[in-house]
Image 1 (tube, helix red, strand yellow):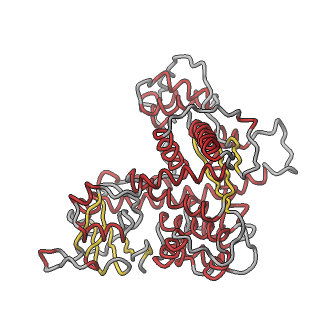
Image 2 (cartoon, helix red, strand yellow; image 1 turned 180 degrees about the vertical axis):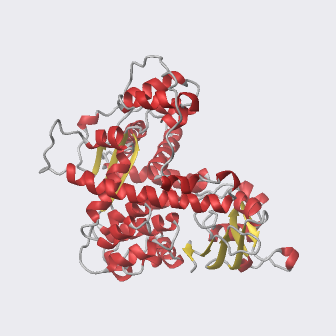
Image 3 (cartoon, rainbow, N blue to C red; image 1 turned 120 degrees about the vertical axis):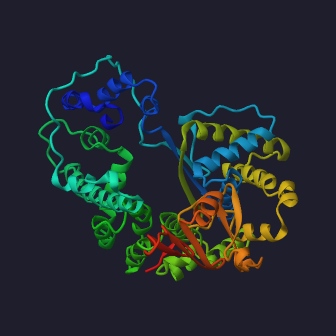
Length: 490
């Protein structure tokens, strides 16, 4: 917080003052100093908005419809949406189409007979603070010298090029991660029931914000990685060594925390180290879904993580969406995600209205799952209609390429579904044709600033035999190379 606001001439006074104050008090003081700053607005709104957890048990067919709805919502918005953001778009679409008189639902009166559960998340909103406008005076004397390990990272920054800056930032990230891993192990010990505090036992949120300087959600993620490490030492070792970031490790944790038999976890840990975070998340999400929806397929491919992010898995998903049910279902599918509290309240009100409308037409009150399915059917009917603008302005060949690439930039790590271009892998000026294997989908940034800007290259054959080189420079190897599917090349 101090780094965002404090000037060099009064930093010593601020540091001396901050050492005696809580984080919340310091937030209030800084807010009075810089009312107009974007950072000050962020502090006033709170570092973490309060979310509500939504858990839904639905039939397999409805789970597949929800997956399809999320993809369609992302395509329409042009960016990758979270489940909560997709739910907001669905609710708004249904609300706009119905002559709705919303039924207000009491938070405490909702039961779980149809598999819906709503519970407030653990994140906390900002609390108000009576801040006193006061600025610490400057303290005479030079600032203390930076420690030796930090000097190696900051010396000569004025002369460093982009590649040198990248190398130093990677060192900083590895250093921070090692510290986070050590902190998580210690916090796990001091928060154990058997640990005896000399004073009042602080909550984990207080430990995170007041003592460790991190968000409570990050601390919970670090503790989750530590706990899953009891069952999967390879995950903990890769994380502590810096081979996996904490976000990558946290993505893997829910998948590795179950099915404790066999050595398949090591395969997932190794896979996470050679793919982008975006590709890893897609593979883990599909694996978790199939674990509940189609255990037979999940067991068959569990030791091959790359399969879950492959075109073959995509094709099987499309078959399921066409009601090609798997032979063995694992019972109702459990959908679980966080969404903004006001979005969830509006969704529940719209859901009640939809159920009442169906009851008036059929004489029977449908279940919440049936009402939810009616909402999804309505939005998909509207979102699946062919766009006349596309038919007029985009050739059939280009639409086929965009459909093949799921209307998303194929560049490793990019999730953009907006401002898409169809790129000729072998330039037309070099004799490249319009064959499907010579065409791929790139966002405007990676197409114009990347490929044609000379900082990246795309070679090979679309869609699954492409090679990407990032960080091109004269007489040197690229910074990193990827294959199709976001896999790092050795």
